[in-house]
Image 1 (cartoon, rainbow, N blue to C red):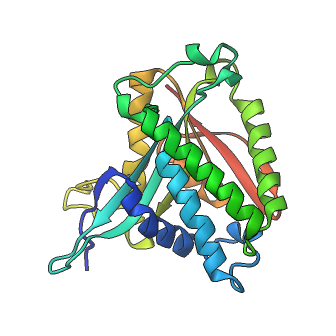
Image 2: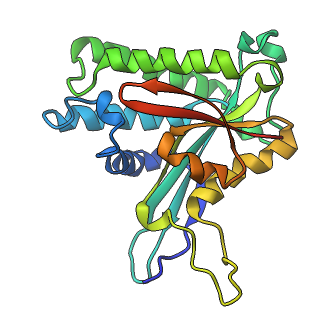
Image 3: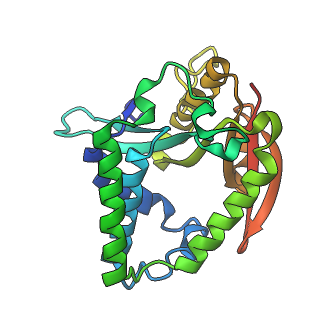
Length: 254
């Protein structure tokens, strides 16, 4: 049976529970995220709490656009969240080689800055509350050292590839699609698909932005995902090992 065509929209804090549920479902056996969450089986509540806070921060992060895809079958009372993608505009600080206030900004997206007084204070409040909670009740599901190693690996990748003309770019921290919506749509009698796959639709948003902002798009993925993104016009820039996994860094030209 054909699945309904999903509707894509910007995420809100009301989506956090559904985002966390999809994240947990999609990473349950991918062979990569287990590195960071060795205690998720013994402490599922701790694991879910960490993922909820991660998704909350992704919604609130400045200069980051988080989109969700919803599908509603006939007769369903509520829509089902079947995918999400985060696109971050890098950099928004002095790391690009100039003064922070001079860093380039994406064009025509005033809402992406999330720099109102309320939004700034809210992020700071969450950060403070999270720090207190983590000190009083350390999360038993995560491997903090592994998360720190990943952070160092990601920074090293950025220092290697986000240089020169690539110092400013759109970057994808997260992209997850329910398997039912990840295949390309069925072709019509002329061999033409009526619409792109959900993953392709997520990627095309940033690829289209390259023409608006004049900057490239970068993605990280497992090596077995390489061909998926090469079909979208990405070129592999390099790769690195993390644990037993090979991570590829891919770039889409302007």
